[in-house]
Amino acid sequence: MDIDKIKIRLHSLEDIIDYKFADISLLYIALTHSSYANEHGVESNERLEFLGDSVLGLTISDHIFKRYPHLSEGELTKVRSNIVSEYSLALVARDIMLGDYLMLGKGEERTGGRNRASILADGVEALIGAVYIDGDFYSSKELVLRLLQRRIYAVMDGTDIRDYKTELQEYVQSRSRHGVEYTIVEERGPDHAKLFIVNVFHQGVALGRGRGRNKKEAEQGAARAALNFLLSRE
Image 1 (tube, rainbow, N blue to C red):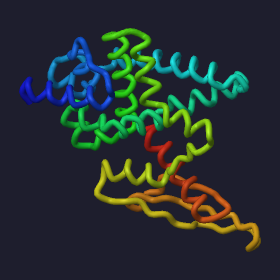
Image 2 (image 1 turned 135 degrees about the horizontal axis):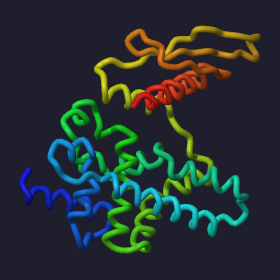
Image 3 (image 1 turned 90 degrees about the vertical axis):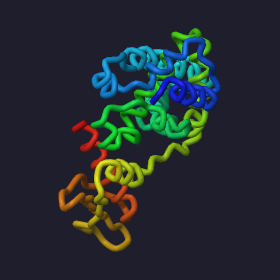
């Protein structure tokens, strides 16, 4: 990709996040995954990610501390954890189509890295770090609150409900041509108080098990267990 095309892409992302870089090379670095950096001998976004993580944590802590004075220390910790989670940041990344702009190595490209939650979340943190270096803390704070405002509202009003089945499907589809299958392996209890136990399989291999008062709840639990298992191996 020639330099003019790169600049056009970078300026396009600037428009999406509503921030103009004084040093556009910082945005380039923020989008450079370590796999690409290793292949091309350039700087990766890992240092910016480290910095952005700190800026993100402080910004959200400050915001919820001032905005929600009724919350206890434990409640504040839980809320912050949900807002800055990998899942949450990956949603933000998808909102701004960050995956389309990331520079990945051939292996990550081939195995669906553009849609991998961990890579997307790291990219958001690197982007925040880049804005902090390019501008100042207040510029990065404004960016964080602008990008995560919907996530903050979702967590605080209780609508932050994860769809683990969809997440698992997207994860598997980014890496395999085969989908997953859910099977009820056991039903316990009387008809008015059934407990369903479900396994989720990929190509005949059990990835996770879930329990629930109905089939849907059990499948969500199985998908969550499968995701935790698969992500732990990355």
